[in-house]
Each structure stands twice: as C-alpha cells, then as structure tokens.
Amino acid sequence: MTMIDIIKWALLFLALNLLVFWIYFRDKQAARHGRRRISERTLLFLALIGGSLGAVAAQQLLRHKTRKEPFRSILAAILILHGALIAILAIVPQWSLHLPQDF
Image (tube, rainbow, N blue to C red; front, side, top):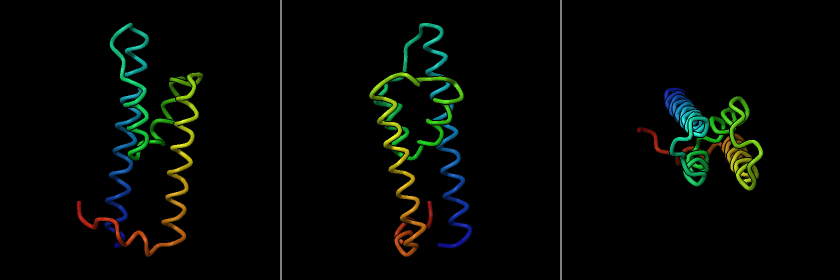
C-alpha cells in the first residue's frame, strides 16, 4: 500500500466520521425540537461501518445518548473493535495489502 493509498483511506475515514458526527447532530436537533428521530439501530450501524470516532465525539460533545443503555455499551464495544482492527493492521501490515487499492 503506497502513501497515496494511505492518504486516500485516511481522508475517506475522516469524511465518514464527519458525516456520522453531523447525523448525530441532526438527531440531537430533532430530539430538541420534537421532530422525527433517527433510529438507534441506524446510528449504531453508522458507527459500525467506520464512523465510531465521529459517533463517540458527537455523543460526548453534544451530550447525545450519554445515558441510554444498551446504546452506550454497544457503541463502546464498536469503538474497541475498531481499535483492535487498527492495531492488528499496524502489527501485521501484510494483512493491509488485501485492502482495495483504488476506490
């Protein structure tokens, strides 16, 4: 994997997490104004597909879903899973060679 590929993946990761943060922000606004909400299942799915840092940042900065269980525990488990996957890719770099090169 070249440096350009790493930068592309990092930018994609950043964009996804910013999008997830924005979606959590929109859900918080909907909650404040009594509008239709985004389901917890959708919020957790967005975290699972790579937006866990954006989800946790929104949860903490916006004080959104900080007391809701099992939401908190599931989100924490997703964050731990993502951390473990990143650690594995860092420790065993040849596994990252199987990631798509172009997107």
